[in-house]
Every structure is written in structure tokens, then in C-alpha cells.
Amino acid sequence: MRAERFGDWTSGGRRRRRRRRGGGRTFHRRRMIAACGVGLVLFAFAWLLVDMRVSGHARVASAPADHTLHLTVPKMKRVKNIPVYTASSTNEAALNAGAIHLKGTGFPWEREANVYIAGHRLGYWGTGSFLVFYDLHKLREGDKVVLRDAEGRRYVYSVFRRLVVPPDRTSVTRPIPGKNIVSLQACTLPDYSRRLVVQAELVEVVEPPVQASAGG
Image 1 (cartoon, helix red, strand yellow):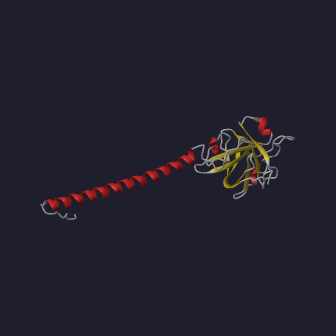
Image 2: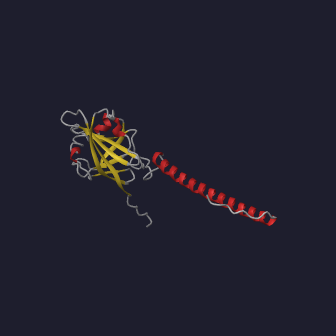
Image 3: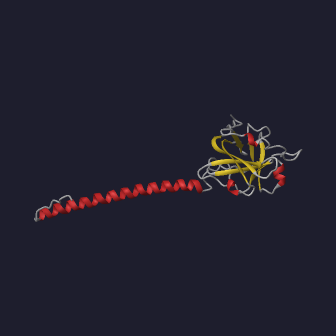
């Protein structure tokens, strides 16, 4: 324990002690205020990070008015700028048109999302669904998946895993915390008994070229 130094019992000594004590209290109070200020800043920053993860307003890009998407997968023969409409899994008309973005799952412009897209493996002759996801099984880690929104913005994803799951495994439609991913789903062959799911993570957002003004 550090020994304390006491002043004399004169009035001058008492005044000096009061000044020293007062100065110590002021210094201590300033340190507490500074510490509280730093704590509040850190708390606000942490809350901002949490809010960015959970808030629908936290976005990679602005949301277009038209939510229609187009899908391109360079390694898949028939997936070249095909339309993807948001619909429920029971909407056969939308599924037969090409592929569907499962209603209730994320969009590519959101910071945290699982953009879940389903398509037929064989499909129906004469429709946009015919063999659309036939070669989904050929995708490997690092292959690219590209989504384009209605404003021409491109979202480039890189494949990081493949899953084979039962038809009722709805957990694969949920987002992965802190990530923006796209999931492509089709039935397994030859018996359609399970679901093949390929997932890719967002690596780049490419803005559309700026249109020159009419007067320029």
C-alpha cells in the first residue's frame, strides 16, 4: 500500500489539500466521462453492425422497383440470361417459364441474403424449363453465377459448396449470417427423390454503364 502524504494542520495546508483533492476528483471525473464516451461510441458502432445485418435497409445496392432477375451461369449450357420470377414453389406456370426465385427468400441487393432459385432438371419440351438446370451437377468451387437486376446491375457470385438434401429440408433456404449468397436447386437424377443445391457467395457488384445524356 502506498503511503499517503499529509499536509500540516495550518489553514494553508488545508487549502492545499482541498485543491489537491479537488484536482484529483476532477481528473477522475474527466477520465470517467472519457471512458463513457468511448464506451458509447463502441456500443453505437456495434449496434450499427448488428443493425446492418438484420435490417432490411442494409443493402449492397439500391433496390429496383422491378424485382425481376436474370440468371447466367457460364458453366451451364442453357443458363444464359434466363428470366427468374419471384413466385411460390407451387407456381408451376412460373417454374415452367424458366426458373423461379422462391418467394420469401432474399434478393441480391440485400447485404445478408439467400437468393434461392429453383429450376427443373429435365422440365418440359417447348417451355423455358426444358433442361434448364440439367447440368447443375457440373458446377465446382470457384465457378461463377451471375444475377442481373432490372436496372442492369450485375451481381457476381462464386460457388463454394454443393449439397444433396431431402425435399423437406427447408433450412437450405435460410440466409447464412453475414453473407449474401445465391442457391440454385434442382431435383436429383434419375429418381427425383432428393434436391441438389449449389451455393455461391457474392464477390462483386458491377454497376451498369452510365448512359450519355441526350444533350451531351
